[in-house]
Image (cartoon, rainbow, N blue to C red; front, side, top):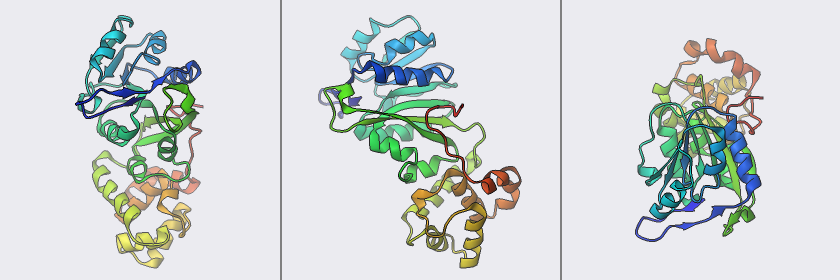
Length: 284
């Protein structure tokens, strides 16, 4: 993982040196298809073994000297580019994003990825607690809830701090993200839906029933009907709801349930399905 600075100082780095952890990442990438875009390859702990997949790799490294050294060790189908990923324009077309995310820039990099079109899967290393919450274990974050109708988030393992040199102060987690083939909501509603989620996570109320009444202006009976249809307890906290439940609440609060219920009603009534977390594409 890289610890980026603002560019005015040398970049401090923690290098993944545990081969077992690297093999785990590569095995997850092997379950996907298409070109690979790697964030912060460093010394090539992931880049070099990923080359055995015989897929085009573009590795974006912020440190010029390190990029030059890695480029001299890579195969012809691997291109090492010196650039700051936050300013890098992600190429068009389906691809798989892989990499160690700097802990203090994880949110910024995730936002860049989630707003970028066309890539299909991501296998990312982030701080353990962040990876856990993005996957919805112990409660989803507002950011995860805002994007869950469009992406499937998973947790594929834990990497101990000792797997790095020098060792960081906390463990890391392997986070997977897959773009949904069929979004739970239309993409054109994403911004409005994100606002709905923001109000729900920050609005007043001791449980989701109170929160929804305050956020939507709907009455107690109406909100109770929504929650009953979606199998949600009124005392549940926003962080405890699943992607299908949030999408269902949004549709009902905007009056869209009749128009879209025919396509998604069965999923809602059956209850949400939780991914196993070990497969970026959700294959069993």
